[in-house]
Each structure stands twice: as C-alpha cells, then as structure tokens.
Amino acid sequence: MTNENTLPGTDTAELSGFAALGITGALLKATHAAGFTDPKPIQMQAIPPQLEGRDIFGIAQTGSGKTAAFALPILSKIIGLGTKRRPKTARALILAPTRELAVQIEETIKILAKGAHVSTALVLGGVSRFSQVKKIAPGVDILIATPGRLTDLVREGDLMLADTKWLVLDEGDRMLDMGFINDVRRIAKATAPDRQTALFSATMPDEIAELAKGLLKNPVRIEVAPQSTAAAEIVQSVVLARTKQKRQVLSKMLADEAMHSVIVFSRTKHGADRVTKDLARDGFNAAVIHGNKSQNARQKALNDFREGSVRILVATDIAARGIDVPGISHVVNFDLPDEAESYVHRIGRTGRNGRDGIAITLCDPSENAKLRQVERIIRAKLPVIADHLGSPDPQRDPREKTERHFEPANDREHHGGRRDGRRPASGDNKRFGAKPHGERGPKPQGEGPAAAKPNGSSKPDGFKRFKGNNKRRFGGKRPASRAA
Ligand code: AMP
Image 1 (cartoon, rainbow, N blue to C red):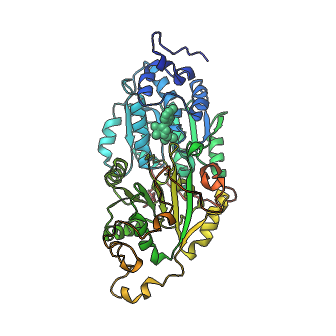
Image 2: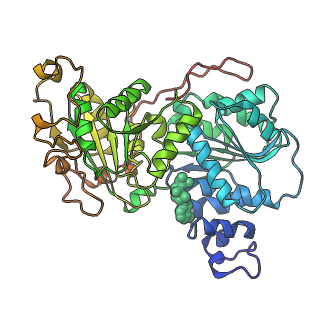
Image 3: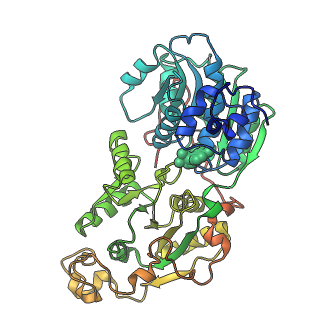
C-alpha cells in the first residue's frame, strides 16, 4: 500500500504500518514513540475506512487496540483542518461509559497526538464542573466524556454539539448496561447531521444492533477477537466456599506472594468495602475502587495499583472493563457477578498483552446457578481446585465465639500455616494455581481451550441483559446512582 501522507524524508521506522494505513505524518513520530509500530488487526481494518469518511461498527473489547483505531483517523483529520473552533464546541466527541475509561482514552490520545497541537478535554461526573466548563469555553478539538455530565453541560448551555463532526461511542454494551442508551441517542442527535460515527461494543445485544441502525450510515463492520486471546492463557478455576468462609480463603490465598498483582472483584459496592476492611484486618493493604468513591479516590486507587504501590485492588464490575493495567497476575472473584458476561470481562483484566493469568472464583452453593451461567457463556466447565464446603461453619466454631469471621490470616496455627501469616500452608499455592508466570504445571482437569481462552467465546447467546431504565432527558432529572 502506498501512503500519500508520508512526508518526504521520514525515516524507515515512520514508514511502518501506520503510515501505510494513511495516518498523517504529523502523528507518526509520537505513535512510534508510544511503541505503536505495527498496527493491530482492528487498526488495520478500522483506520482506512475512517480516513475515507466511513462509519464504523466495531465488535471489539478493550485490549484490542481500539482506542488508537478510532483516535488516529480523527486526529489525522483534525490536524488537516485549518479552521478555528467556535467557543463551547467540540470537533470530536468520544463517549465512554465510565470515568476511568474516559481518562484512559484521553491519556492515549495525548500520547498519540504529542506535539501535534490538538486540544483535548474531559467531561466527567464526580469532579468539579467548573474546570471542565472553563476548559471547553474556547472550544476543543477532542472532547472525551461520560454521558451523564455531558448531558448536564449541554442542557445548561455550556456546550454545543452542532459543530461535532466525529462521534465515537465506546463500549456501547456497557453504556446500555449502565442505562445511558437514551442519553447517547439524545447526544448523537445534537451533533452535526453530517457527522462521522464509530460505535464499538464488546458484545452485540439486540439493543446495540438497534442503536447502530439508528446512528450509523452504511457502516463498515469490523469484528476482532480480543488481543489477550492471541497468546495469553488464563487458567480458570473455582474454589467452593461458603460466603462466611470466603474471607479466610481469600486471605490464605493472598499470603502467597506469587499473587503479586491481584484484582478482587466484588458484586456490590458495600461488599467491596467490606472485603477491603477485612483484608486490612488480616494484614493486607488493598486499594478499593467503586462507584461511590470520588473520582480522585478512584483514580488514586487505580494509579497506586498500576504503579505497584498496592498489590491488591478490590473492585466492583465498574473496573472490569476498559481498564488496562498490565501485568495483573490474578483475578479473584470474591463472588460471582450478576451477569455472566461480566465474568469474562473480569477475568480479562489478567492475561493481557500476551501474558498468562490466573482467575479464581469463590463460589458459595447459593451461587451455583450463576456459575452454570458463566460456564454456559464460556462454553467450558470450570475445574474445582478446592472444596471448603465440608469444613465446619466458622460461626459455629467454638474458637470464634468473640469474632464474627474466621481468624485472621496471620494466625494460622490451626490450619498448619506459619504464625507470621506471610506464607500459606504448604500445598495451598498449588491448589490456588498461584505459580509464577512461565512455571505453570499442567492445566487443571477438565479445562478445555475455551476455558483457557474465554474471551474468544464471550458470546451472549441466550443471555438476558439488564435494560437500563433511563427516563432522563435534556432538562430532566438525574437518577441517584448510575454506576456500579
Ligand atoms: P486498547 O484496546 O485501545 O485499550 O489498547 C490495548 C493496549 O494495546 C494498550 O495498552 C495500548 O497501548 C496497546 N496498543 C494499542 N495499539 C498498539 C500497537 N499498534 N502496538 C503496540 N501496542 C498497542
């Protein structure tokens, strides 16, 4: 393929894949510096038609490289525009369902556009509006927003979308789950009628197909497997434990230092707080991230985890998608998610960028039906690697009379562990599959390829989705809680 945009004299590195796809020369240096030399499949498929002005309907997850797939063509086009922006307008609008994803998208765009004089702004709930309004007052090139706050700013006249010629809807199915779909429709309607639109969704429920029909004009349809399925292996297993036992089981697992970077998923915000507190009591420092936390607290928790200053992040499903933290060794599902599909997104936090990962699900008998749903969706039976159901009920254990829970992890004498609590009883490591990367033994029995690579089979076949009940309009009332 030839590239008309390649500047004469650009070096060989810059003549790599992105130049060949038509990305403007002004972006090639930063793209290359970011380590993006060879375009990923989604980028190869999505960039050329977007540069031609086509709409895109992409079935892809975070991890596939979709951010650059939609950002680079938009950046290329914006750089080519000489005209000035009008106040309170945005040339391009990228809608993301969660604040974390929006922040991540802006970070990526800033890296890719380094030195190219393209302005970006974030519009998110949970943080001061004032600075956001100030930032968009002169007009911005690319606005990245969550639908709720954006709706507020449009309603109050702080932002006009009539000049918005590029619209990206990221994680459409997540928007649907979170009840944003009507906001999205209204926002899209307020943008320029001749806009170019890209819609990305990890799955394709009927509502998303409907949305695509309404918003996209003769789109190019692109479907890619998540990048993590290419080489990575996620070894999945189940530990049977009663809800009351889960605290102790978790603390025992975490005493194994091979679990060096762990996300513990909790179904509810309250549950996430409780798990975090219990971990602290058991001597583990964990950060927590969920929808009741302020934006600053959420970002700090994520940064601490990303930088490795805490090795455990407790999260609700809000963190299950979109967040790309490399090197997560383990995902522990403290409980099963309400939606089986969330399981796939949760475990996809590990096994990223071709590295192996381990996913362990703690399952109380009351969660068996949810476990079956998960197994249906991943089309594999998950091996049970430990069964604590026969153990005595901790609340009836005479040693526990003054404690509501099991004894803390740093007092293990009754379980054959060390009193210092840093190492589990021998054999626990193996049981929890917690070997260092590259030293993993044979897979647990019954584990088929689909189990090892579940993301590739995350089909929502026959799976009922929550339909958000969003009655809000521009000028209407905001629901009290919108996020996990
Ligand atoms: P995304 O799906 O956009 O969140 O991207 C997933 C990860 O892949 C991010 O860590 C990106 O920095 C990385 N990435 C995306 N495109 C490329 C590329 N062409 N080469 C190398 N890394 C990439």
